[in-house]
Image 1: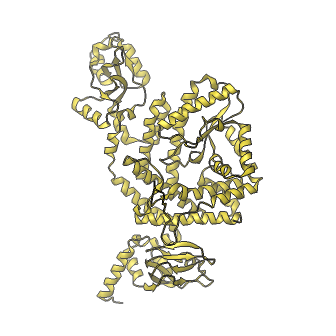
Image 2: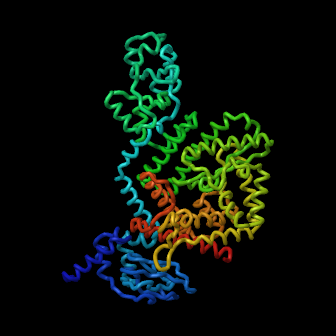
Image 3: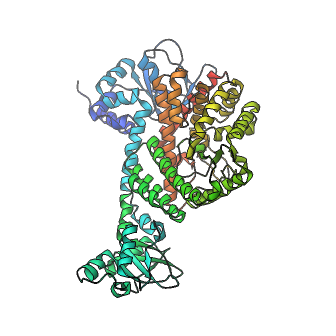
Length: 628
């Protein structure tokens, strides 16, 4: 059948318009032209009924061309809001059943229609269309991930990398000696520390010379210099130094101009460290293994803030490689665990007051769930078997040092005081049971708030057996008190996903963050809160949101496809938080969770809307289970 030039031109224009939206952007051109040749167009005034719920399978697929369409339940509740490029009723057409919702024009709108028979024919001929229709949110996420990879791969972050201060590269104390130290002893110190230089300092700690492995080859080995020769004889005198706060780029320039590979760093003229060319270019080779190895060898808490920055840099690299949010947040949390564990080991190891006390450091909140992003404060606590008043004071003093160092590493002190150094949260196992029992029994707003933080605990360091014992007790107690779970569910349902009726999203009018969504509070938390309640009801020991949902699915008879969509939606919101926070950090801003949806790419905006719809579905399940 031939096509007139005018019809062909119209088809091409229609396809070009549809290509701004998924799945049409991924379809082969031949399939796209096949589709548009079979589309009809219809106008509907605001308030008009486009499709009625019922038992009869729909006759057409509708694609919104212009305007907004609302999906409305039988009792008048708006549960969907569809904009340009979105389709309805996909589920009904795929299943051959009637539409579950009424669809009304929220504004004056135009829609395309595709006959049901043509819809099924297109499913058979276009893999991209079939994939989207059967795996809608998964397909959208994969397309978004490809765009993220492209964005980060093109990002030039050398400026940021080389503008960071040199002291952020210091991993250990410098190897030092006096000028009259015998070579044998100086070289032994280098070997013992496994470093490539030794710095000669005077009595005030000022560097007066340096000897590197390259110097050793030329001035000691080949020159056959006796090992009892003083260091001053072979060292490079008055070495080129830089202030510890100078940018990394300055060291590169100094090395290039003077043909050196090590630069001593000073503060107020005194030696504080040495940076090598290897240290600088290791910035390009960040890996989980490199960071964990560096953490294992840290012997001074002052070196940990630099490694905390490395963890953030690694997160950027993993984003660029297209890592999904579940694994990325697990890696960030895992590395933050290692950092905290090393800090705890350093501080507890030098404190004799802790001798004879069985204690366990508990991670709470997002850290307890292993869902940390790049903007997170501290939530932690201590549990011990038994301790005298003096030993308890020692535990709190130790915890205060850890809390203070974590603050220096970029984990701000909790404004609500939920930290192990707070006497209120440094308790014996018996006292923790009493505290949890009090919250479960009374179910006050304050108790429910505390439960949302403390019930996500897990062991991080110390006597790990204390945590699972408390978890088993908590699960038994919560399941035995259905009233408390009902109260938790009611409290969780007060935080509704911010989907609008007249526009896509309900935005904040807060003066501090106007025209934004709080992706943590209003995006991630509906999933987190529901998963916590499901886990308590099913007696599941997991603390992570996705794992809680997966393990509760069988007990709660949740369909696998529905569960997968919930987890995909949750992890997209987590990924959006990470990307937003990283962009803020790159621009020197404090990271937060407040996103302006109008600033998002069209695809991300569309997926966010779909993710918040899934949050509504999770809450609908919670409401059904608890009769709310």
